[in-house]
View (cartoon, rainbow, N blue to C red):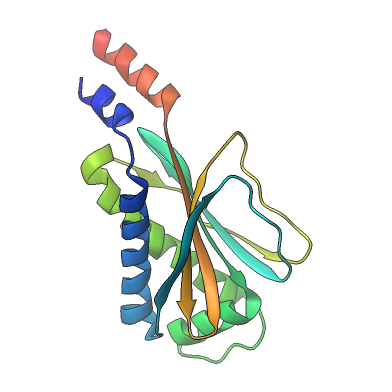
Length: 179
């Protein structure tokens, strides 16, 4: 069955990283006009807390489910918003938070579109933006995040993505196909 193939298709981690870097490169070159280079890439199960962060989360749903995350400090978020909106921002406000949500939308929307060729139709949630100090993010379960550091001069941000087969979706589809 097609559904079984999509759900049981392994996601090549290096391919996922390549798609994420490509989407970030498009964003930095075309939309922001900022230099960009790929920093470290690694996998990680926990997300270490940092101070003065902006975190954007966007859900992925379909035969595969997961989360995309953009994580950077407020100074770099202000630079990104300034480049995107062509206005100077020196502190975080609604415009900066909206710009960072759009970064998550563009990067992971691009990744989602490219993954659909292999994994079937996927959807994205609205981005959720969290800003402040002394907080941590955590997913439920034993998730392994693919982490890509994106550098622009002395600044950096992290793009994180987690994907897993959607067991409940595949069981529901199998049930419908057998009816």
